[in-house]
Length: 551
Ligand code: ATP
Ligand code: MG
Image 1 (tube, rainbow, N blue to C red):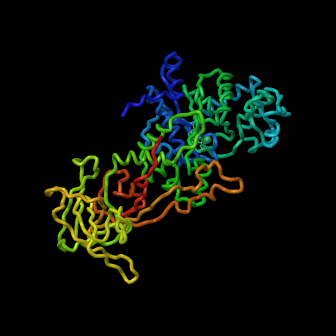
Image 2 (tube, rainbow, N blue to C red):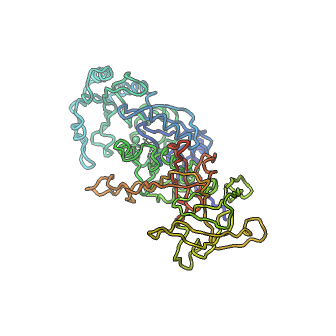
Image 3 (cartoon, rainbow, N blue to C red):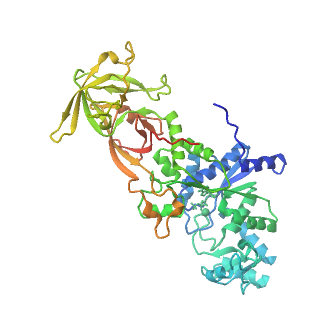
């Protein structure tokens, strides 16, 4: 295969230029989650970009919690975010919080007031939004816009000191109510919120707005490339305005397209609703697109990184096929996952010419790609389970699994022939009486081949499993296209979870790999945390095969 020469993405181009021109000696990026929910696959893309660029160019990345809204935030989220980033294998330079900078931000606000660039507004929220005007119509100046510096300082300090109730006053920048970019029409800098903050407690009852916070935090930390999603494009001029007006370190903002995936929702607000309404089993329900959810599902960090690498970085919004993600998971697990045999819909096979008490332990590779690598021992006995789908009574010619008078190889062991089909009173097949050919034992003499090979499990040694077979959570491919008369919850897939049972070879329960395993010929499964010593629960990570191929 030809070695692909990868084109630089637009962020790499910018960074290479900045390093070459000497604008920066090294780069510093940041990942800025709001601790109001768990990280999802979209965040994985942002993490891979921010940490990936820093790694590639010998720079560093800060983890910065954007914790300016005390009402929705919680330490539970702060902790989970760190755990998820570590799981992906990234290490941040500094752990920072926007709230660490509240004092500095406050000082800067007083500075703006003193320079006549900010004022306290008594209008209600509705009055303020109404006064903003529209894209075609200039806004109207607030009647409080021309308060004196002294009055503004006094009122702002009173806001800080808790004199006013929530919503009674706000601090706004005094820029231009007729500005073509609506962001400049006297944006809000501070609002009153009498709420305890998970870090600053009750120290503050005024909290800075996103636009007034983000750029300055970047600047304080000397972030060189502040990378965010496209919807912040219109905020960039304001980001620059604050930095220039305050005359502080010139961080720059760059935007990329957010990740959208078919059959998937990634809004934290909606994910929270699914959790709160009990429509899923929690943030880490294996159907959730959260990082803890896909981890519980058995997706690996390497698969997610491979996926982020494949989708790349673009400036145009796109909807990525969920199958690409599943393909990456299969690629990664195919190379690494241990193999075991598990029967899900059992039918009994009796090998009539095999001694009743005999058991042979076959040494089988844990990964067929490494036949000389580690192995597991699989017991073979007279009575076995095979999957019902691997037998057919009136089989077409091309059916190469077991059929009356037909032969098949039991994986890793002998060839057997089906001599007799036993049915119950209602005509259901209950047993297949077969005979084995001892000369077909692998490694003994000449190899005889048959067209079909099927998996099996000894009835005497089988371990019972609970299987949770997961499918996509939603039935609508493009979840941004939910019709207006419908709710996104109307598209929940009623078959996103089907329960099943499995009978497994005993070595499965001794597996120490810590990642998903392959149930041979069916799919990848991972041990779930709901398991107990006498009850093993496995989640289906992904089915084994799919016709999907990435471009
Ligand atoms: P949500 O809309 O799901 O609540 P958010 O943008 O509010 O997400 P934050 O915690 O503020 O979530 O995001 C942290 C970082 O992750 C931001 O830089 C944001 O741009 C980025 N991010 C969020 N969602 C996506 C996504 N779907 N694709 C790529 N990056 C994303
Ligand atoms: Mg946000």
